[in-house]
Length: 313
Ligand code: MBD
Ligand code: FE
Image (tube, rainbow, N blue to C red):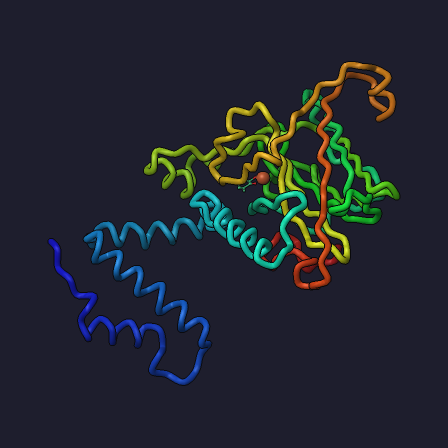
C-alpha cells in the first residue's frame, strides 16, 4: 500500500492537538519537541509503509527496554551518545574551546561518590588473584603543558569479566571506582587490574535489536575518566586499550585514535618495587590536557541520572 495522508488537514490538526498547541498550560519547549517527534514518526510510518504489526512490535519493544533498564544502553548502541559528542565538539570548535584531550561518551555505568585520595589509590579489592595487575598513571596539564595540581581524576572500569561494581552485586562496594586528586606535579597513579571488554546482556533488549541489525554488542577493554578542576572545562573521556579485538569496533562508538593506549607489560623487578609490587605488571599511561574556561557551566559534568548521585558522598 502506498497511501499518503500526511499532507491532509486532518493529520495536521491531529498533530497540533497531540502536542497541546490548542491548550494554555504545559511547557512550550516540550510542545515543540513532541510536535516534531510525532510529526517525524507519522512521516516515517507513511514513507516506510509501517504495518500495524511492525508498529505494535515497536511499542512493546520500548516497554521491555524500560523494564530491563536498558534505555541508556541502547542509546550508545544507536550512536546517540556519540552524536551528542560530535555536537559538543562542534560547539567547542565554534567557541574556540577545542583542543586538549578529546572527550568521549560517559556510558551508563558511573556511580557517584567513589573513595577519594591524594595522588594514589588502589582501585581493586584484591579478590581477583588471577587478574593482571595494572598501574595506571599520568599527568594532568593545561594546554601550555603546565602541571595541574589538585585536579580530580574520577576513574571507573570493569573487572576481568567486563562487569562493573554496583551493577554487578557480586563485587564489593566501589570496587574499581576511585577519585584521585593530582599531586603538586599534576600526577595521579592507580593500582588496579586490567579490565576486560563489556558485552551487552545477551538476552537483553539492546542485543535483541543489534541482532536484527547484524551487529555485535561488544566494547573493547576500556577505562572511564571524569577530570575536573575549577577554571577548566570538565572532561568526560575514556581510554581504549590497544590490541583488543574490539578496539576499533566498539558497539558504542567511543573509540578515538588519541584515546587508544598501549598497555605495556613490565617485567623489571626494580620498576615493580617503585609501586610496591613484587611481580610483573602492566603499565598504562594516560596524560590529560585540560582546556581553560571561565564559563562555570562548562566546568561541571552534564546532568543525567547517575547511581548514588546527590547522596551523601
Ligand atoms: C559500558 O561499559 C560502557 O562504557 C558503555 C558506553 C555502554 C555499555 C557498557
Ligand atoms: Fe564502560
